[in-house]
Image: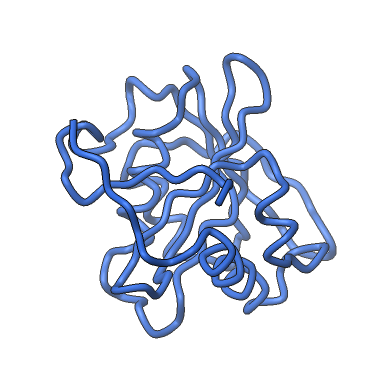
Length: 161
């Protein structure tokens, strides 16, 4: 199998991820390159050159459940299908039987994309005066596109380096 080595450093990519996640001011705590590098989340990226255009995080919560979190697309790259692609890749790369994610009720694009891939709304709650919808699904019954091993452009990076 081929291996790819990027000229961007993990620190540079982590800084871009942190900056992107902090853009909307939606997170309870701001992110830094160091918090990105130190957390247990696996990030799936969409790159344009060396620019992080979009990201989704995968965090294994139990041996059966992965949380898909921090789905974010840079404003300059929106309306190109990147969010949907990242959702599909998140499901594809998840290593557990079930996946779930939280979506703000005012995020119509993300709600539509979750429904489009077969995720089901299973709960609602309020968080910091916002309504949050929890979407969940069994990986094998969700639409996630091609097999990761077949895609030449896909890369999985560790947070070391």
